Amino acid sequence: MTQITTTELPQTFQTLLIEVERTKTPLTVIHKGKPLVIIYPANSQHSRSAFGAMKGSGKILGDLIISVAEPWEVLE
Image 1 (tube, rainbow, N blue to C red):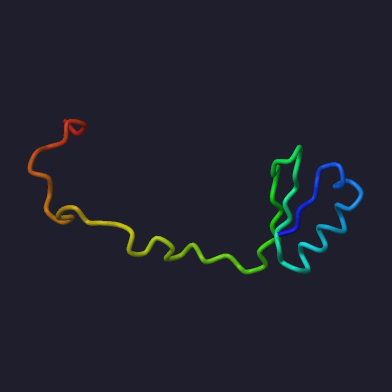
Image 2: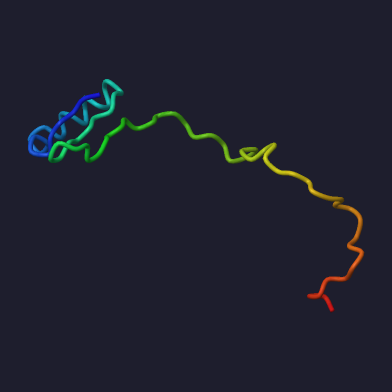
């Protein structure tokens, strides 16, 4: 992972972004000796379809067909 300080950043920012894209390695920006931000390359893969994304994640907790034995208070 490449590192750069905030004082060096303005002069070389565009060059560094191109390098991150080319090499696909993150860039850590350091401010006062501590990591401030990590720049990752953009993911060029297509996102997954929303259709079927939640398949298998639900549970049926009771009978869905039999009517409720007691009437609901809202319907009274």
